[in-house]
Length: 528
Image (cartoon, rainbow, N blue to C red):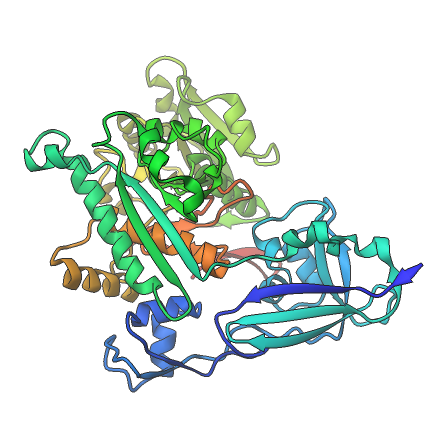
């Protein structure tokens, strides 16, 4: 027996107009900055400035009218829709192309959950131009900042076909966004040690910087659409343990808990309900990855995976200076294992592996590498002396190569920008990077100086980024975010997987975008 059903999707859009259009102007209110406005509408400061030539630099006054470029929220020009179940061979890019979208943005606009929760068996809304039995029509009502999208069956259909909309399934397609966010921060302030200039003074300095960054973000986040309340608790001066803090501050009272800083304190929370609300800001301890918490620090495996993906793309018919490419992996037996290589790099890649069993004698082979191949060098080790020994040996030969590295190696003691400047090409997978040439970064730096009469350090900037992302995640449904230093792209387990590739050019790490194009029958790599 057939019935008629409706699917209700509630989507919080930052524009207050109907689907396919965008807001025409924004009235400046207290707390607004050009940076916060551009982030709110998913634009860059430059795009806002281009649309508002009357602006005097980055200064704003309450009541100013800011024009917002109208290139957001592309319209999906379809009249009928159907339910689609994701198969094992599907990808968002593949389906977007098959369904006739002009960009992935259109695909994600109709299926926002697919951007962060992609899995086999999940239900998607698929546009269709034919009057099939599963045909659905779409209408839109706009109330303030909330856009209500109603997708209604155009004819009688089998009730089992739309089981996705049963009451038990509603939570999977309806995101409840908060207009008020209560945040608890757990930091070790070590007040006594700070005042007495003890060894723990540095911990307090770090915590106070982190706090200042969060408070600056609070100025941007509190506006007419959202209220954010922030409380602090000192995890050090509580002499018993963190349980005493939470006895008077139950996790149920908060929407977000930022901290503690260290894994030891985080592990004290493992028995608490609501642990999914906790965002770990800086712990790299692998033990906490097994907990249902949000982890801001990107595991190095994700960075190596980004390099491996780059190798896979370059291995497909690509050449360097008319030489075939070949993967070259160098490491020590105490660090590198065959399992790790197999896990990261496909068997389809032609690879040379140099594994030092005892000492570094095997590195001498790097001086005699073939000149008929371009090597993509990967050093799987964290010993700076070993890394430098590999580079010295390969430089002493005549082989052509590209050094592919990750953030941890770039920051190793003893490896200075001079080493990267000598290389023809160095590509690094970063999970965090501050571009001081960026208008957005310098705007926040200027605001920090004005507020605190001090220069923000990396802890202050990370505090700003973490506060911005996780509050926007709760209040706006933000899935991905690139802050001033940290980037965020959580997976289904709330672990951060954000990685971007950068190339060392002109004494700085410039953003590296790889496009594989067919020209004259050959694959050509372009760096934009």
